[in-house]
Length: 133
Image (cartoon, rainbow, N blue to C red; front, side, top):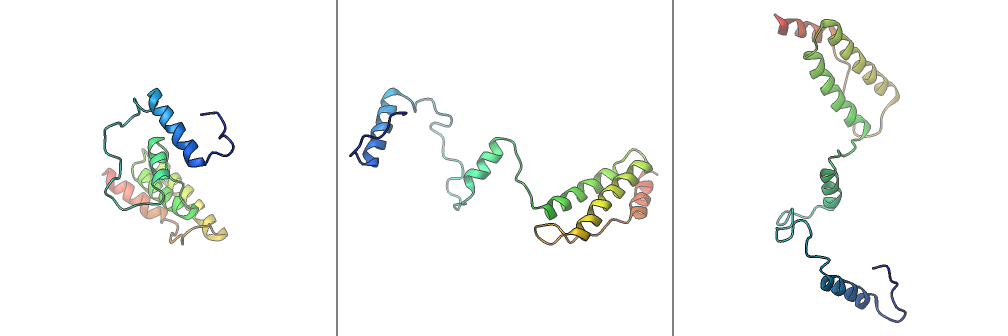
């Protein structure tokens, strides 16, 4: 398919010829998913379907706006603090995420509203202690 379209030949005819010749060579015989329904068939059309499919097949994750990424990090930090091995570790985890939250509040981040305030370190540490009893 490296040859150039001949002058004077319409694009559609040239493309149709390329496809026909590839079919004749058997280029489409062993394609993955042959004989299976198309993924997403019957669902409403999503303009970003191919991006989502590529991200999923590559095992990637969609990038989040900074405010949403910070909210996600805050939830994960809270879970890590609750599962920490020591009170010192729990306190450090909460203080680190609190510093990031304070910085975001001071400087602002792009994306939807942050709607996040620093965690009460003493309350989280107290909950950590209660869970260990």
